[in-house]
Every structure is written in C-alpha cells, then in structure tokens.
Amino acid sequence: MQIPLQITLRHMEPSPALDARIRKLAAELEHFSAHIMHCHVVVSAPHQHHHQGNLFDVRIDITAPGAEIVINTENRGSHAHEDVYVALRDAFKAARRKLQDYERERRQDVKTHGSQPQGWISELSPAENFGRIETPEGRVVYFHRNSVVDEDFDRLVTGTEVRFAEEEGENGPQASSVHVLRGVHPAEWPRG
Image (cartoon, rainbow, N blue to C red):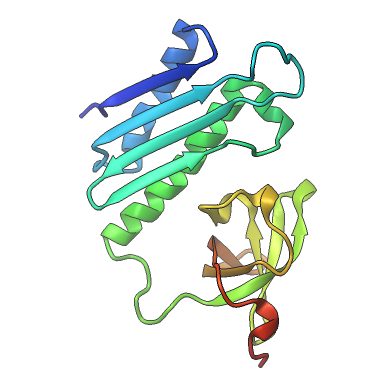
C-alpha cells in the first residue's frame, strides 16, 4: 500500500530532489505502521531576506485509526536545521518513534499493570544528547534526546515533571520514552 501523501512547501521553490526525498522518507514510514491513512508534510523555508542562522521547519501530520500524530521541528534551535535535508531526516526520525509507540499501544505492548513511573528531570546534557530523571524514591534513570515524546529536548529544564517507560539498558535503567507532565511541581512530591 502507498501512503496518501500531501506535500506543502512554504517560502521556497519546488524541487524535484526535495520532493523525491520526502516521498522516500514517507514511504519508509510504512515499515513502522501499516495503519497510516494519510500523511501531510509541510516544509517552511527561512524568510528570504535572512540567509544565515535561519532554520527550516518541518511539520508532519499523520492520520491513523484512533490517532493524530504530529511532529513539528519548529524552533528546535539546532543549527543543523539550516539544511532542509537534515531537518527532514530529524522530523521523520521522530515520526518513526511516534509510530512505533502507536503500534505498541495498538498491540497493547505497553504495560498496563500500573501507571508509568513518574519523576523529574534532575540533569540535562544537551551537548551529549542525554539527561537523567530522578524518581520520588530517589532512583536515577538515564534518557536519550530521542526518547522525549511530544516535547523538544532543547526546551527541557531541570525540575520538569515527567512520566516515562523504563527498560534495562547497557549501563542500568533507562527511559525508552519520556512524556512531559503539566501540573504538580516536583517540589511538592513526597520523597521516599
């Protein structure tokens, strides 16, 4: 099956090479989910009167049964996104992760025996693309930039409240997905 694909380019001229790259990346999404009903990719170029320091924004809207998956690289702050192909690569990588999460949920692979553990970000190392979460019990769990779901890693701050899916990594516990929570401040949590 071929994914129904819509491509929108803003502030830029059509390019056969760019169009082909978007179509290839979108087609590869089918390897991660056979349930995609529609995919809309919007690429926005920096305004023409600025030539340096402006970043390409990529938004991917995926429709699947029971889900709307949205990836938006807008304002990510990575100078690598001055290259449209790097911005596309990163956006589609994030889309693959979200589709994998969606498929695990559809198959009920997500643990349902209790709520996901919660904690707060106790350490961030943007240069090395990782952070650490501390739980109310005092445990420390590693997470990678790519594990952050529905939020931009570069916008996270220590103290941010999160819930996460935990797995055993090579060097101990790690979070396979990290979701930012809104509400109670971590200082109000009981410590164990």
